[in-house]
Length: 258
Image (cartoon, rainbow, N blue to C red; front, side):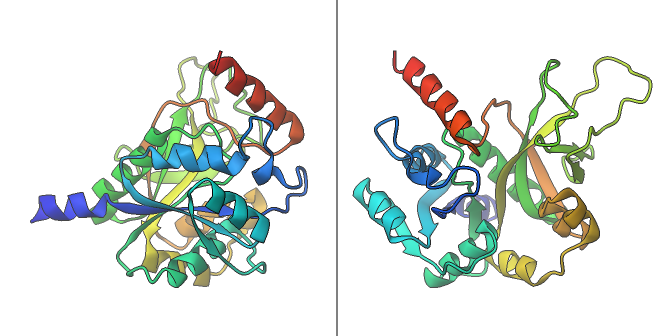
C-alpha cells in the first residue's frame, strides 16, 4: 500500500506561469529567435520529467495562450492581477479542480534549459521527506569552484544532513571564515513542489522580514515553521532575465544543433 501511494504521489501536475509583461525583457516568453517561442522550450523540457503526468501553462494573455495552444500545450487563462507566479498557479489549480492532496510543481517560465532531472529530484526530495515535516520540495546544484558565491543574483541554500533547508540567501552561505578550501555551496534552482492545499495555505501567510529583505519568497515558508526538502542535481541551467541572456541562450541552442 505504501509503495502504491508513493507511486501515485509521483504523478504530479506541473504548472508554468507565463505572463507577457517583463520589466527588463518585455515579451520574453514569446521571444522566438530559435524558431519557437521561449515558453515552448520550457514546456518541452518539463514534458520530459518522469514525475509529471500533466504540464499546464497558466497565463493572463491571449497571445501566450494562442502560441501555447498552437504547439500543443494545455493552457489555463488566469487573472492579470496576480502579484507572482505562485498566486497564478493557485488560481489555475482551482480552475482545474485539483484535489487538496494533488502534488503541484511550480516551474519558472523563463528557464528554457531546464533539465527534467531537476523536476524529478525536487519531487523525489519532497515525497521522501514529507513524513519528516517537508511541506515544500525544491532543488539545488553544487556550485563549481570558479563560481562567484558572492553574486547576489545567485541564491544559495544550506541544508541539514537530511536535506532539509536551513536558510536561503543572496549572501555567501555558508561563510568560510578561515578561508579553507573545499567548502561546498549549493545554488538554489527555483522549482517548487507542494500539495495543492499547502499552496493555498502559503498564500494566506503573512510576508516575513527576511523574505522582504532578501526578496526570496521561500523564506516565508521557513519563517512560518514549515520544512523545505532540497534535492541535489548538478546542472548549469540559468533563467532568462534580459535580451542579452536570451541572445546567449540562442547561441548555445544553435551550437547544440550543429
